[in-house]
Amino acid sequence: MISLNGFWDFGFVGELEEYKGIEQVTFTTSLPVPGCFDLEPGLKLRRGVGVYKTSVVIGGKVTLKLGGLGPAAEIFWDGRKVGDCVLPFSEEEFRFDAGEEKAHTLIIAVDNRADDTNESLFPGFYDFYRHGGIYRDVFIERTPDREISYLKVIPKDIVKGVAEVTVELTGNFPAETDVTFSFDGKEGEVCCVKNGKGTFLLSVPDFKVWSCETPHLHHLTASAGQVERTVTFGMRIIETKEGKILLNGNAVKLLGYNRHDCHPDFGFAMPEMMVKRDLEIIKAQGCNFIRGCHYPQSSIVLDWCDRLGLLFWEESLGWGNKEEQLVNETFRARQKEQTRRMARKSINHPCVILQGFMNELRSDLEPGLTLIRELAAILHAEDGSRPVTYACNIPFQDIALQEVDVVSFNIYPGWYINAQMSDVQQFDGEGLEKALQKYETILERPELKDKPFIISEIGGAALPGWHGDVRWTEEYQADLATAVFTHVLETPRCSGVAIWMFCDTRSFNDYRIPSRPRGFNNKGLMDEYRRPKMAWNAVAKLLKKR
Ligand code: ADA
Image 1: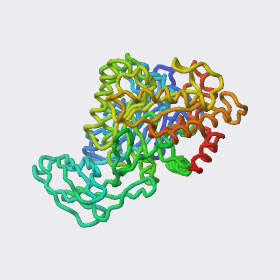
Image 2 (image 1 turned 60 degrees about the vertical axis):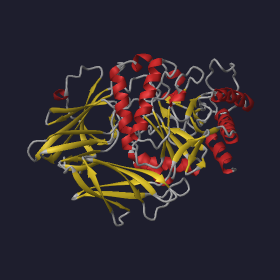
Image 3 (image 1 turned 30 degrees about the horizontal axis):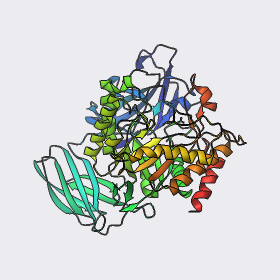
Image 4 (image 1 turned 45 degrees about the horizontal axis):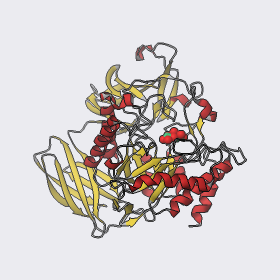
């Protein structure tokens, strides 16, 4: 496998010019891959087509592997188009004939212009900036004749140490193939795989349970002759029972944040050391949970959550999707494909304890209900070991909560005023308590009473350095966050909270900017450079006291 990360030639055609294709592009500079071109000096927040070009020596049948880019791209090999990327943030593989062994030109033309068609998974109205770039790693390899294309490990028994292992073989393997499964380099067990796919119950020798306090990891290597694949996994069981989320049989309270995998200087291509730092400070504050809003995550994020013992909610890309999108066949197909790929990509990460999709879709409408059913079915079929959820912002109108395993509400008492809340300027602890209790009455419905409930978003904005006791001040946000955490800790029916949000994040930059001062969503408990606001310190103090 050849890594293509590094500096690529780069040319840009701005949105005011007519983009006529890659032939028109002049390469004027070099830019890093992974990286977001629209944060580079001279291109900051510009929209257009950013064309990346590199050269690679390879030949024959090849597979190009992209860890995720966005919002959309075309791929060219020696000037010939070999693929389109329409699933932002998803892993993509393109297989093609590279021709003879020599230096070839690879071009990835990333388009960050507005795509407000109903087909797009990443239209312009989302409340996080639509950066253009190659967000994650790029690799190329000669396509092997045979490969172990999938290896999934689902822990089944953490007392005896049993895991269910599924293997898929691709290529010209015999109808019956012996595969050796070896845990942590120990002596392996041989199983016969018939017709390219097999599922086996295997004992994990000398296993240790994965938990937030002891995030032990194991490795499994499957080998079929010369062909090998190794994956990392953890022995932990996540389930829901009588309104609780159980980790390894014990009720767990999820305490943490929504986090965009984003930074004002790097966009969605954050360097690993900075991602790790974010996760470490969340853990050190006393939290155990992150909701990865609002798209499939990089392996960097999930690998570090595995190692640090942080519990994670991963979800497919979506934000308040409207009816016109929900009824669009292409949109639905893309959404399903992204959700399926996400489940397969993340299958072995012990940190992923909840899988979700489509933040705040119109779950009050029939097309929303149908899509929720279909997406939940995909996740249950691909995985089956993790509870499924979605973040609902219209709890009183929703018609789909019964379709998923965990009920999750995005609610903003104390910040946004909605029909259920009185119009208050100053939201005190008592008002918040009453508002939350009102939402929680929904859980008394018979079809919901055994489902765990979490607050998937709640919070208010604070402009860094702005003081006083009214909205937008650090003090107001700190009081709100303290009241929320206190409520969650004291309410047995509530299994957790992901505060909106970890740090300020660049958002829309259009006519709606007055609601996003500085062009940022300012509801972070840290600012965009991870400098704590008062709310961060208040929550830290509260969690230390537990
Ligand atoms: C939401 C949404 C978030 C963010 C938040 C806000 O409910 O899910 O992405 O937009 O509101 O700050 O208003």
